[in-house]
Image (cartoon, rainbow, N blue to C red; front, side, top):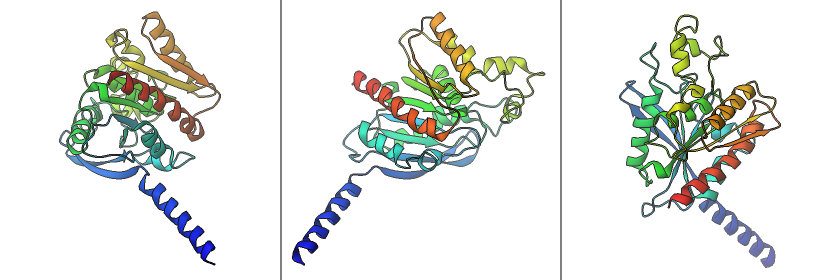
Length: 277
């Protein structure tokens, strides 16, 4: 009986130890002065988080129709993001993009200023409230689908803020999809405002890049409806001699694909963070 009790005690202590070492998931309530409202974000701190150490931050964006909690609730392995925060000793922040913001400042609707929110207001909030590396060498951004577009869009336009960026199944060219995902509500109809669609498509922002200034990785499933626009972006970066990683894997537009993809991208960003220390 004493041996059985001893075994139970040992198992309980092991489980307590594992829980004590697990990443901490917070929900931060941030305020956007640009949009005059409070916005939630998931903040995942690694198990050894403490104020005496500065941590790199990965901003992880959700897709159209989603919200800030998607990355900790919709991945097949619900602990994926927490495990990556622990494994690579980084803070992971999952902002809210208001369903279909596309992460830019809308020229149509002043209540959608998500470029300002993500790359200025939220970054400043995280740096003020957490122990972070407060410069581009300690910041990366990636996301899925609409968030893939958003991550590259924000990083290309704010290279003083981010040092590395990525995209998973990203909608990196808006123009082939004039009737989809509320893009017209954010930019106006393509038939009436084609210049806005041109200016806000990631594929048309490669002129902002110079070789080796921004670490870039992106991928797409071979069965994804965004596959061709990603291949086109890859070709354009090759033409401009911009170093980048581009990966095609079997799969479609699904959480099974993204749950796998984020593990490779987290490794890429970890290498970036380690190389600049």
